[in-house]
Image 1 (cartoon, one colour):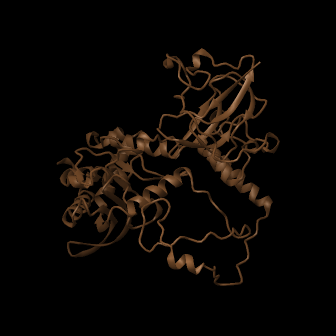
Image 2 (cartoon, one colour; image 1 turned 45 degrees about the horizontal axis):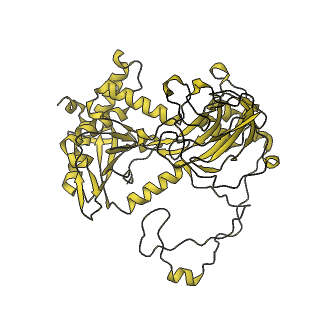
Image 3 (cartoon, helix red, strand yellow; image 1 turned 30 degrees about the vertical axis):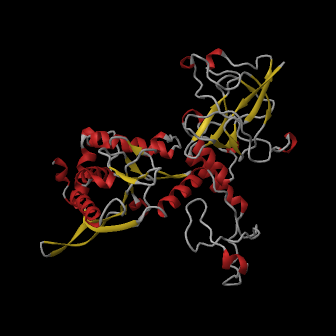
Length: 461
């Protein structure tokens, strides 16, 4: 009887580590080639890993929640048939055979070395796994974990017995009734003083983590966690990547923000007509579509908006003007903020752009956005209007020089031909890298977007 060890592979995103989110198998379970055995989370996406072996699970070498380096062993499988099926395209070490296209497995091999960075429990200490065999997408499984819901206890209503988001939320709501949760009492003290070591406060100058140093920044003293009143949330995965990128952007690119109010009544009329058009019958149409076209049009008139500041190794710098638009859309997902982008958006007509926006949004919400879809952006739109916000000063996405915020569209009094009338009004705001763009350029860019929202016929130019 042979034993094979499966190492964490490089899932094709060039990353060095991943978090073990959920095991789909446990010791003693029988597995076949291409059965999903574990769900992992990289810095940008959730990935289901299939088994390259047939046999019986002997041991799980990394516990759920552990961060594991590429190349580290994560599971052992034993049995007379514990060898990779030729059709899997994987060798006994998780590497690709010479003819990978004959396989259904999606792994691409692994690095050389590395080990789990978190302590592994002994087999007897591992918690009993629940929800094995439940049909649910990765974001739904994460939602269930966050709410403390055992998927095995949820009644599925989706197609083919799949557990849906509504199923999980309904189960969690019903469970909360039986828990009889009470509102915590308000603390008696209005304020609380946490002592700070004077020598540390007086002498320490440290940067935020991660990010470049800021003069005068003091570290936060590490104090014991009050488990009765506080909760510690580990910073990892998407949140870790977002934090790193935002700090790096905020403290390297000098941000300047501008905004203007816009009468978007004609944009709303156009959206209504598109929704009624047979050409758009199968596509979701919203004001974001017109906003996206407006941004693409305005970038063409002010190309520096889509340029990038490049620091060269010899100490010199350059501004790289990109004559194309990879349009990023900031997406709030259950896993955190993602900014996938539509490649070469300038080449798409209205219908194609609408389809691309719809696909981008769906993919992000399902947790299937690839790292490649989040790289190479040239400018980003953040639609804060969906949260009821009028305007904001967003932080520029790293590698770009501008970000535009679209506020909520609501009816307000507006002066038209000397008379006050109800009109659909929104606010267009944006932040820009002042190393690349001067005030006249950023103002002209925002004014161009506003002009299109006020008169979408300009898109015919």
